[in-house]
Length: 180
Ligand SMILES: Cc1cc2nc3c(=O)[nH]c(=O)nc-3n(C[C@H](O)[C@H](O)[C@H](O)COP(=O)(O)O)c2cc1C
Image 1 (cartoon, rainbow, N blue to C red):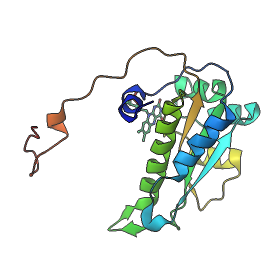
Image 2 (image 1 turned 180 degrees about the vertical axis):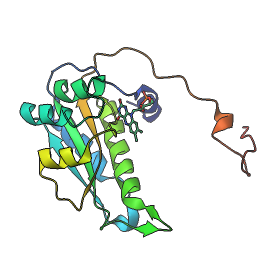
Image 3 (image 1 turned 60 degrees about the horizontal axis):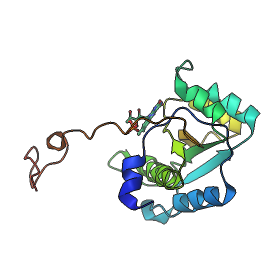
């Protein structure tokens, strides 16, 4: 898939087929994740890849608002990726924690690569961090940033429409409309 096709194809997916994710494609998705930039190249994240049904069921219990489709997506999708950050490894400047940035970029690399391979994903940030730590055995010094199911989508809807640029993109100066 061409880059802008990937950008336009990505959307949050919460309904999946149970078909397995191809191993070669999964390898490329992991490779794309690891190609992401990070503060001082410290790679302050760890990625836990889960394909065990019981583990996925336990993870679904950690999703806040469990009635929501995000929780069932974690069970139905064949693979779930959990992004974990290490605040001690990344930088903090002016009270900004860059481990969140490192993890977010890595996660987006993963998500775009999964899209390019034909799979759906969904950022899930609303989770009970302590319970995820408990399920996966993650030490307390690490922060659980997000998880995403990865799998063959059952959804056909188009991406949400692009928002109005004037509210988000400025030209030369704050609040000055970007026009090109
Ligand atoms: C940091 C972050 C956290 C998110 N957490 C959740 C979540 O906990 N549950 C959920 O259903 N969607 C979650 N989403 C998905 C957003 O709701 C979704 O990206 C947004 O509605 C735009 O839709 P789109 O991804 O289809 O473009 C999250 C997205 C981001 C970027």
